Length: 141
Image 1 (cartoon, helix red, strand yellow):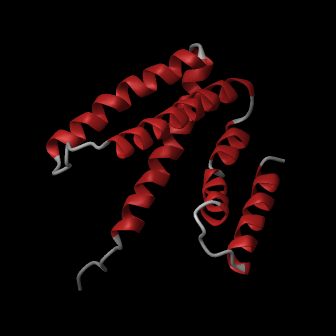
Image 2 (cartoon, helix red, strand yellow; image 1 turned 45 degrees about the horizontal axis):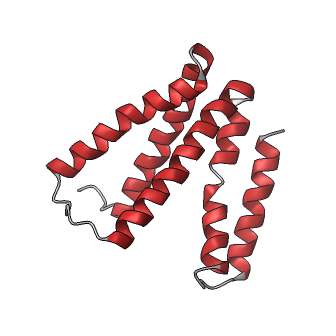
């Protein structure tokens, strides 16, 4: 009997979930040990070369067009703002509250998808967003 095949999106999503969960806990510990802004910078100084190394060892295309480069750069800008905000927040509040609120980024993305990108607004999606908000309220109490 072999192992069941796992959908690659579920596989990589699970890796993201676990590693980002560990990242928040370690980020909290770092923010308690050194200035949270410095901790955020060190975190990205390690992540940047890792991402570049992955490009080099994978079959990633190095072709960049203006639109894709601008979008990726802007995404990096928001990632950096979120990273710094998370580290500073961890130094001032509980890991549970900061990580739970930060993990709600998917609600922002879902709302943008429906409002700006024209994705279907369904009762199920609206209910999911509502339950997520309720979950954050419950976890942060």
